[in-house]
Amino acid sequence: MSMRSESLNAATAIGSVQDVSGTSVSVTLRADRFSGLSFVDGQGYRIGQIGSFVKIPIGYMDLFGIVSQVGASAVPESLAKELPNGLRWMTVQLIGEGYRTGRFQRGISQYPTIDDEVHLVSEADLRVIYGKSDRQNHLVRVGHIAGSESIDALVDINKLVTRHSAVVGTTGSGKSTTVAGLLNVLSNEERFPSSRIVVLDLHGEYAKALGDRATVFRINPDPRNPNEQRLCIPFWALSFDEMLRVTFGALSTDGKARNVILERVLAAKAASLATSPIRGLTAENLSADSPVPFSLHKLWHELYGLDFATYYNSKGSPADPATWAYELDANHNEIAGNAEAGHPPRFRKVKNVKDDPEKINYVPDGLNIRAQLEALGSKLRVSRYDFLLRAGDWHPDAEGIVTKGLADLMKAWLGSPKPITILDLSGIPSSMTNDIIGNVLRVLYDGLFWARNLSEGGRERPLLIVMEEAHAYLNDNFDSAASLITQRIVKEGRKYGIGAMIVSQRPSEINATILSQCGTFFAMRLSNGSDRSQVTGALSDNLEGLTNMLPILRTGEAIILGEAVGLPMRTMIQAPPKGRRPDSQDPVICDELSPDESMTPGGWNIKPLEAPSYDPFVETWLQQNPIPSNNP
Image (cartoon, rainbow, N blue to C red):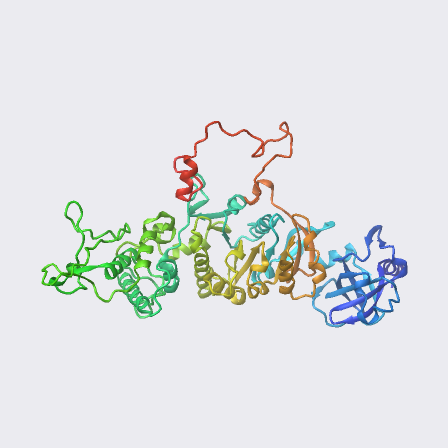
């Protein structure tokens, strides 16, 4: 060993191992290190800092660990009464091992023994462990190590995408900005020209941050923005049960109504397929779940007649619409309704007088789904549901013919020339948000699953799905469509090139099974104890000491843990420029700058209009669109 190596070892040695219990190691500090400061190559290091790294040399490799406790609480229970070294104890959690060649790996192949030396980890050690992005293509820079701006925080993109990840942090911790920063890095067209990311944006935050590299689909696109398109989720692309939930809703428990609807849907799809053949689908393998266009308006109109119609007894079969007793309008025309417009037919009241030649009765054997038919009729007439029930070029006519098919929809979502697709779901009625998210995820998963061996499938070109505000729809016991398919994605998606990034401010409200499948965590400031315990419980490493730091993290600072990093990193995430950040900032109540310095006075710093008009206020509210129709 050279003189310099000996002097470095002497400078970095801080104590020795006294107790080993699993991955937890108790260490006594050297008496000459009790000052808490040591210098290595002219740089000072604080000894015994919670969350700092230490190494234990064993032969030709070093064990690495994180300091989780310091002082009296770190004394082993068996020695608590004796305290032979006063309060100069610390507890270290072992997390991995490195070799003198510079290679580092997670996990422990052997354990330290009594009196093994414990050393500080210097910046030179960290540079070896964390590596350099210009040497390894799979590493991307997301920021720098907190306290060491010269050391890049690098994550393994392979593990980040396919092994799933979670970004968690309380409101105001910089969570949305962190996600935007990560997506900016992952969508770099020079490094990753085939990157493919779908963002489920519940609040319309990311169009501003990612607009130049994203195609935005929203219910009410801005006509001035060429990157925005109308969001269309055609009902016929859903499975039969998915379609029932978002159209008819809950049906009677006897199953009669469901069976009748299923038979009619299957017949309508068969007729549509015969008129407009679809490659890969035949009459033999057609099912009610097959994504074949058909007219829901026509089906609704027919079922409405079965449940509401009255008929003239004297005219023959009650099942024949020619015998039905329609009401008459002012011009004495029958009110037979309009299927495409969602207008129901109107029928005369029952007239059951003995020997009356115009005796009128209800059509027998109705489906008993009057409430569901009325509700569906209102959806067909209200524009808020047009993204689903009148989905633009994907809306079928009475014969089930559409302008664009399922391949066009998949190309729009997955084959955009831009690397990011933002599905802005902020305009979807809250009552069906959970179902719609589940339906979108299921369509994406099924498409990539079956096309996994093709050039646009998941194996050849993996997909990352970013689920913003995940606690809003993943907070049950897999009773909802969103939870069921998300569980499948996080458990099986890795094999087919589908990765998930779960983003939430309340990880304690997310189903624990889903969170436990996330291999990498970007844990930002979390003040709530149950949220911190949920993150700690989902981690495979014994890192309670590190996660105890979560309440004191700065805005924009995260502890990155898991498979995408060699060692857990306390990182300052590189935020995008101010003009490219998510639209999630708090409104300004009072500007901190003086009026002379400020370019954007705060909301309460400016005088209101003398005679403001609230007509646009009410118009945007009623049409569920933040842009008034008369002021684009």
